Length: 389
Ligand code: PSV
Ligand code: MN
Image 1 (tube, rainbow, N blue to C red):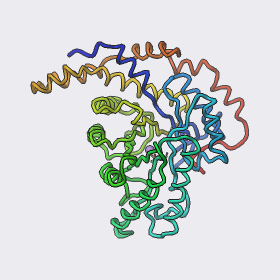
Image 2 (image 1 turned 90 degrees about the vertical axis):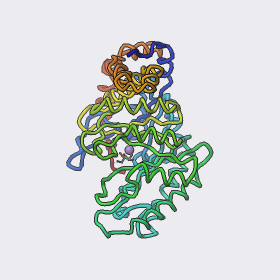
Image 3 (image 1 turned 180 degrees about the vertical axis):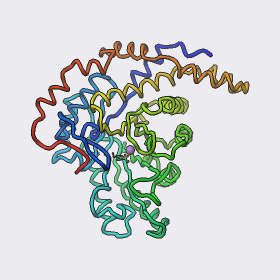
Image 4 (image 1 turned 30 degrees about the vertical axis):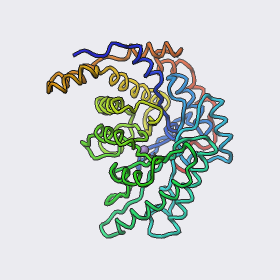
C-alpha cells in the first residue's frame, strides 16, 4: 500500500503541532517506596521553567508548561507568567491538587463532610483565579475521590456532590477558559472511584456545557482498553479537550510516552487526525514521572515520541485506506495503516527540525549544550522540588 507523498503538507502539520510539558516532571518523583533525588533538579517554579525552556529550545514545539497547585505556588502568578514569557514560554494547564491534605482522606469534592467539600471547592476556585493571572486556558481537574470498601459511602450521593462542585467551578470560568475533567480507573481509591472512566467524565461534561471537556490520561485505563476508540468517540462528540500522555506496562506507571507501546500511540494519533483533532483545541500534554532517568532528556525524548507517532499517522494514505474499507478489503485497509506505521519518520522529522532552525538531533544537542552540568553546578543548596506541597 502507498503512503502519503505530499510531504510538504505533512511537515507543515508537524511544525504546527504543540506538546505541553509538566512542571512536576522536572522535579524529583518516585513511587510509594522511594523518591530518588537527582542532582541539578529545580528548587523553584522558575527553575522548572528554565528547564522547560531547554526542552522547547531543542524541540521547537514545547512552548507551554502545565503547573500543579500547590506544588508551583508562588506569591505573584502574573510575575511567574512574565518570567515564562522571558524564557520563550507560556503557562499551560493549571492542575488542581485536592489529594494531598489530611482532610482529603475520605475525598475532596465528594467528601461526606460539607466543610471539606467547601475547602476543596475553594482550592478549585483559587486555581480558576490563577488561570486569569497567568493567562492559562485550561483548568485540569483530577480527583482522587473514591472509597475503599463496599458500603463506605453512598455512590450516588457522591456523584451529586461532584456535580455540584463542578457546576460551581464551571460558573467561574472566564471567557475562553476551559475545564478539563480527567478520569482514572483506580488509585488511590481501590473500591469505587468517583470519576473512574470516560463515560462518567463525559456525562458530567455534557451537563456542564461546552467549556467542559474530557481529558484522556493514557495511563488511566484497565489493561487492554482500546484508548483510540475512546478518542474517536470523544472527538466525534466534540468532548475531547486533551491528553495527559505517558505510557504504562501495568497501571498508572507514568513512563515516557511511546516507550511501552509506540503502536498504541500511533493508533491514538491516527484517530486524532481522522477526527480533526490535530489542532490547538486539543491539548497534547505530558504527565509523566522520570524516577530513574535524567529528566530533561527524557522529556525531550517524550516530545519526539509524540512527534514520531504523529508523523506516522499523518503518512497514512487516507484515499487508499477509504477505498480499501469501502471494498471490504480487510488486508489492504490494515496494510494502509501498517505501512505508514512501519515507515522510518526520523529523517522526515530531522528535516522538520532543520527547517525550524534547530538541531536535527534534540537529545544530542541538549547533551552538547552543557545545561545538565550547569544545573548540577549551580543548583546547590535549597530544597529540591518534588511531589510535596
Ligand atoms: C493522577 O494520577 C494524575 O494523572 C493527574 O493528572 C494528577 O494531576 C497527576 O497525575 C499528578 O502527577
Ligand atoms: Mn494525569
